[in-house]
Length: 193
Image (cartoon, rainbow, N blue to C red; front, side):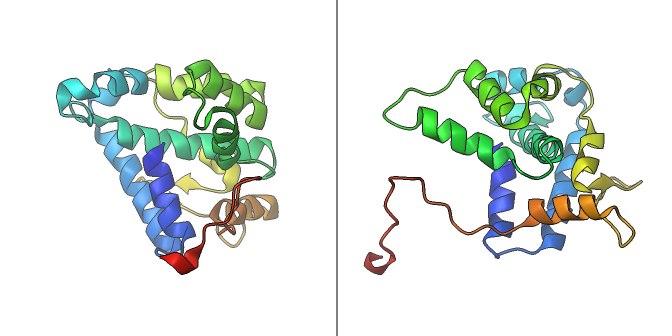
């Protein structure tokens, strides 16, 4: 999911705008949907076998690309199920709190436990579909935050007539949040750089 956060970070930092973010996500979805291997190789297998194939994936399937799309769908599902109270950001924060150095990294059950803690126990089947099957990505989950795909595969945002709740979830997803400093971690000294 690192590439999902790479795109979000560029947007959240103010270096890119909303149109750019939606366009980039649409391009990533189009890339995934044009992959022949997406129906033959799981994301999990693609990640494991990446180094056999130059470090990015298997054939025309990149684990960076599918991981980005999986992150978007998981984020949308968590935000929708919690009515905007939680997001994939909260999963990342929980993982950091539990497994940051000097602790050891986390196993998949640690990741699933954090996803379930944040989004609810019923998140495991979605996670498994995205990572351990070759089923098509359930893009319908994007509607939970007011996103959708048009006939050409472009990512579209809520229009003027959209449900106000979905508009609020969409705006929450797009929100540029102030920097969060972990409790007990000092604020970096910007004057020394």
